[in-house]
Image 1 (cartoon, rainbow, N blue to C red):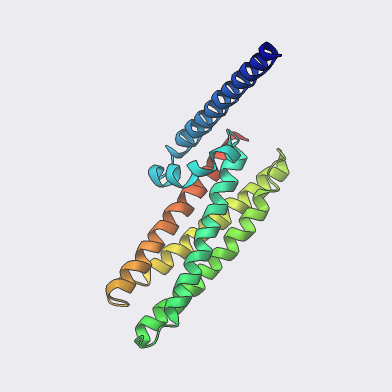
Image 2 (spheres, rainbow, N blue to C red; image 1 turned 30 degrees about the horizontal axis):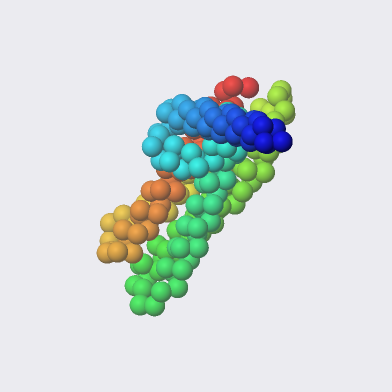
Length: 195
């Protein structure tokens, strides 16, 4: 009985070691896939940093990579919209500051709408052929438009429209959003090129 228990424990240990080794290898290959895919984006370090935490779900699937990048862009866009809307409710804003924040909130709202539509459309892109081309073209157009919305919002804070910490905070948020959205568009374009 003692030997049987010892062999069972040893067998269990071997199975656990094999499982951990396999999981590490899968995560490493997924991470390498993400790094390789992100290397062609405009902001590769932002791309790798933001997507690596999703390596287990992305694995080596270009569609899942594009979808995750787009979801991340939508999440950042929604957070940015909430932040800008909150800033717009601050008391003591000058008319010019209020106008810039109001315009930015509208642009970011449009961006959120476009990214949301893109995410739904991207889910339809698993089929090759004419339908794939149509759907992926819509996604690329809408994500590109969302990126333009993000840039337009950021442009509203150039010059003296806002000053100080609020301006720096909003510009920093907008830069990050634009980088994440640009990377999503690049990964979507890579995915489209494969099919």
